[in-house]
Length: 71
Image 1 (cartoon, one colour):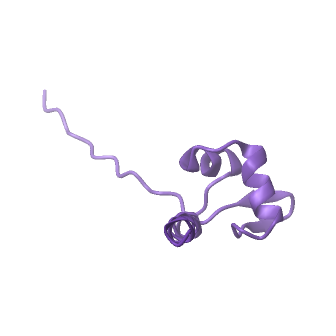
Image 2 (cartoon, one colour):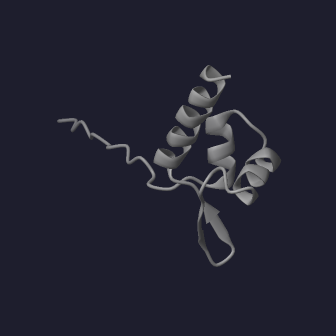
């Protein structure tokens, strides 16, 4: 019997759900919603769905670091 090894590639999502984005940032979904409503973190909306680009989350983190360093 010959066993074939299968390699499953992990595909990184292009956009994160509210739950995934909040977990990534280690904040609550409510806090993420507030940051989104205030325009601090951009979101992609289509229909009733809201998604977040991981690049935008990283940019927000870097921006927060810079503002804290300047304080």
